[in-house]
Image 1 (cartoon, each protein chain N blue to C red):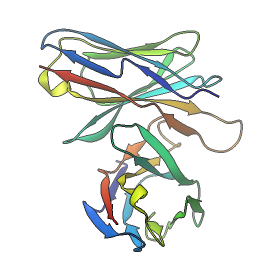
Image 2: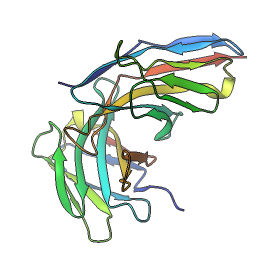
Image 3: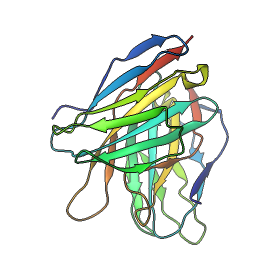
Length: 114
Length: 115
């Protein structure tokens, strides 16, 4: 079945450090890929998405490229800020199968220290 | 445009009771999905409704049910609550464009504690 695997956390970085959170997926068909962010006590916010191979999603300095050959969608940011501290979820949606059904990774907690 | 509204935000119930959670999607969205988030299992899909019909269902027991009304508002119900039902329940409002892929917008969630 479809699944998403993302790196275990927590990840602790100093402000202005480079961030990479790895995400790989298993899916049939041609899934869309997403990164969601969850701040403490809140719901999920869509951070960025990519709908086909080689697409690059970007938002607020974060980027991720849909790599079909390596089935990956790694999240990167060149210089993190304290305000980026949150839990990040990689997810996929396989429209060939279920609609309205996202499959999530376990989440990676990021803490950025000043 | 107003976001996704979930009520109540917090709820404490006792084992064996039942509970109903409500979700109002973004105006114009006709599809709603529900997810359960727990520390152990992460985010798991419960079910999805489109125009008052359940289109898809996750692997949860029959104690978990839902419905959607003609105004797209959705409710989910959990009967005979168990301690393990303690979780954050998230509702997503699904934008289904004429072309391109769907997008999901999440509400703040309802934190259910079962004692």
